Amino acid sequence: MALLGVRNLTMHHVTKMGDVHAGDDVTFAIEHGEAIGLVGESGCGKTSIALTLLRLLPDNAKFLGGQVLFEGVDPTRLPAGEMRRIRWRGISMIFQAAMNSLNPVYRVGDQIIEAMQTHMNVSYAQARRRVAELFDLVGLAPELMDRYPLSTPAG
Ligand SMILES: Nc1ncnc2c1ncn2[C@@H]1O[C@H](COP(=O)(O)OP(=O)(O)OP(=O)(O)O)[C@@H](O)[C@H]1O
Ligand SMILES: [Mg+2]
Image 1 (cartoon, rainbow, N blue to C red):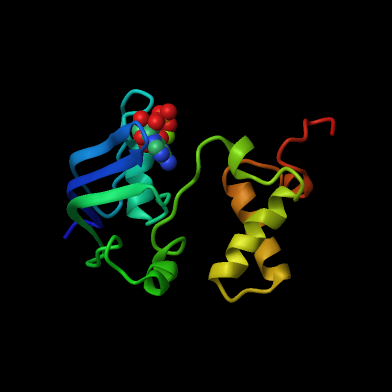
Image 2: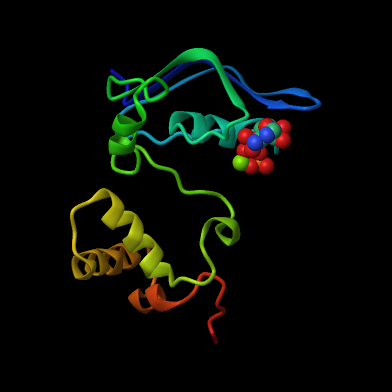
């Protein structure tokens, strides 16, 4: 069974000007260990599809049908509490535009630690060590975790 299967997913955003078709009969599967890229022009619905998988759609979004299977469960039909358990640990999203998704007045490391502590039973010190490891893994100096998202190398 695929790690993630999306079948005939259709969702709209409801607006005063009418419905925006953001995902129309979308079907794809991702196997364990596989990476796929979803490519399309700006506004074609890539982010809307990702938000549907994570059940993070805004209130005006209308899920019209289709099936999602992540490790055998359909995140679009799970109760909110159960969804919270698999979100981030099992399936998560790196939001585009760091300028919009990171809070400019909190240090980068603390924002990552906050997410870790929300989803895992770890102390601040343990989480901080893990952030340093993760930074190292992607070639970032661990000291950068004490920077603010918008700061320049000098600041
Ligand atoms: N909350 C919303 N209300 C109304 N329309 C929306 C909303 N969010 C997205 N849309 C519309 O849905 C369509 C798909 O948007 P989406 O952000 O999913 O596209 P995208 O493929 O991720 O684009 P980009 O490449 O620019 O990130 C667009 O027409 C967008 O204007
Ligand atoms: Mg997008």
